[in-house]
Structures are given as C-alpha cells and as structure tokens.
Image 1 (tube, rainbow, N blue to C red):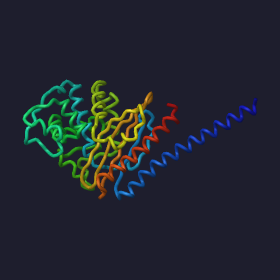
Image 2: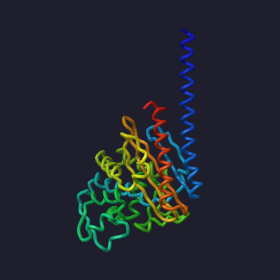
Image 3: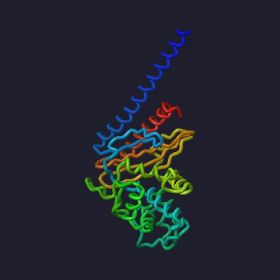
Image 4: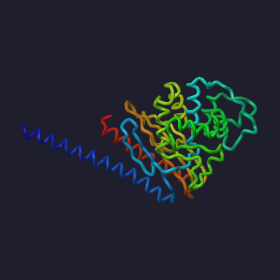
Length: 297
C-alpha cells in the first residue's frame, strides 16, 4: 500500500512538473511571438495580457506610451454612460449631424447629415464602426479632449490622455505624448468600466455589448476564439505604422481576461500589422487556455 501511494505521489509530482514546464513554455512562446514580430516589423510593440481577478499577466513594454488612435472610443462611451448614471445625460438624447461636422471615416454618420441620432446610436457607431464624426460629437458632450482626460483621471488613470479631436489625434508622431496611453493604463481603466466599479451594472453591460458587436476586428483576436468564449474589442490605426487593439475575453464558467496590443513606428503595411496582431492574439488565447487549466477553472 505504501509503495502504491508513493508511486501515485511521484506520478502527481511528475504531472505537476509537466504542467509547470508547459506553462513556462507557452508563456515563452507568447513572448517569443511578440519579440519576433517586433523584429520583423522593425517596430515598437506594447502588449499586455492580464487576468484581473488574480493579477496574473504576461507583459511586454506594457508601461511604455503608445498612440491611442481609435482605442479611446470605448472609454469615451464609458464617459457618456457615467453621465447617464449620474442623471446628467440620457442615451435617448438626440444630436444633430451637420455637414460641417463630417470628418473622414464616418461610414454611419455620413448617411444622416441634416438629421439627428441618439447618443446610444452615436456610441454604437463609434465603437462598432469606428465612426470618427460620431466620436467628435460624443466628445463635445463631455467637454472635448480635455473632458475625456479629466474623466480618465477621475477614474484613477493618470496616464491616458486625449489632446486632439478626430482625426488629428491619429498622427502618432514618435516621442509625442499627446493622445497616448500605455497598455497597462488603458486596460486598468477598461477593467474599471466593465466591472461595475465605475459604471452601474446596466451601463457596464451596455458598454460590453457595443464592444462585442465590433465589426472591424474579425481577422484579429476574434479569429482564434474557441467556441463558447465571448470577446469585445476595439481597434485603432494611425500614422507611423500605428495599429492597436484592446479587448476583453470571457471564458465559459470562468472569469475575464483583458488584452492590449499596440504597434507603432514601422513601415510595415496594414495587412502585415494585422497579421502580427492576429498571431499574437492566437498565442494569447493558447496562454489563457493553459492558465485556466493551471488555475483549476
């Protein structure tokens, strides 16, 4: 009997060692994927994958600044929802869309010039279609870029800042801190917005719903999502080869993971940058699956 129990203990210990080595190997694979793409693109990459419930994370330059581009838009709508929760704003409020307001990449609002759209419809347009005119109209409701930055600070984010309107905020000039964030800061604020800490339960759910219906990211992290998982995301792109995505991933009968991938300062074309995000996203999904196993989920 003693010998049998000892064999069982040895087997369990061996399996534990294998699991530990596998976890380390996969984390190494994710890190190597990031480094390989950073070299291949001759770019700066900032990446963070985090499990807020435990603090577990894999990070690469996660505290360096990167251009926000359109990844600010879910947080913009969080600011609108915060006003709704406070009773100073209403998602049904109508906003006039004037021709003089129109800027480039406004696939929704360009069809409604001379009419009105509700704040809810503008948030849907700016998150699901990245409509820039909708974003500017929403920015007006919260006091412009300065109001956005103030909302970030009130939320505890002293890093993320917005200084210009669409589309000027997308210049992404190297060493220019305007309109930038860090992967860690943007995900920290996103977590606060989605967890019901910053917003009411219904408002957090509304923000998540808009992000889940993003129509511009199907070939990125979403392409590798296992059956039954849920993802909400928002992409961005700008000058100097800038490309980014922030996302939440919810696993069945488990908890939430947050991901951020930012690329900048590269001459790589758009398709190449998308491939980098897709590959890193695939490695992230694999890492999440293994982390769930090691955590007993």
